[in-house]
Length: 172
Picture 1 (cartoon, rainbow, N blue to C red):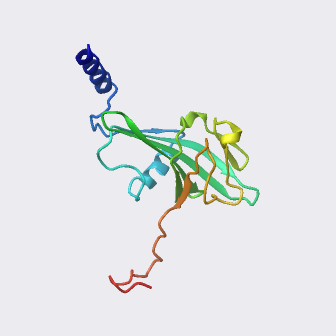
Picture 2: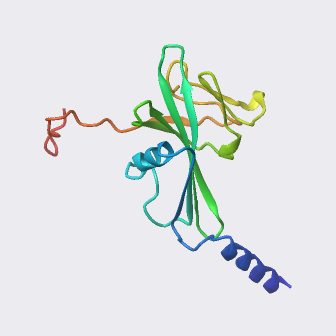
Picture 3: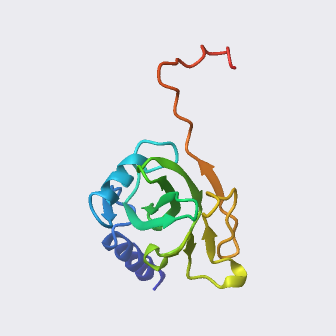
């Protein structure tokens, strides 16, 4: 009986695409914005996976507008990998010009349940456990979502045009 159960579990897992390293990429949301935002995180550290995953789904959530006139574009990335279908989920923040600003991780939620209200993102969690991320003053250093404190990881600073990095061992 145990052997039959193990075989059935493996079969179901393979049918779901887990552990196949299929590297299937899905982008959801209005085009061309969703594709442009996803492209911006494909080659950044802690952005999109390059290899070793089964499926990666980027969902463009929409725009958040602050009272000061700033616009942030929001994306959610879920990367599934391994025979057990483990998933890594992150929330990405971009500016109005589609420039990647940084991310919160982990943010474990079905992206279709994230709502925008004014300058805030609302999540389908109990308010006592944290269900709101307000960007009115910019991305806060930590969020309080579903009893967890995902931290803000800013995008690496871009080098100033026309400057070269210091030689190795000659830091600033």
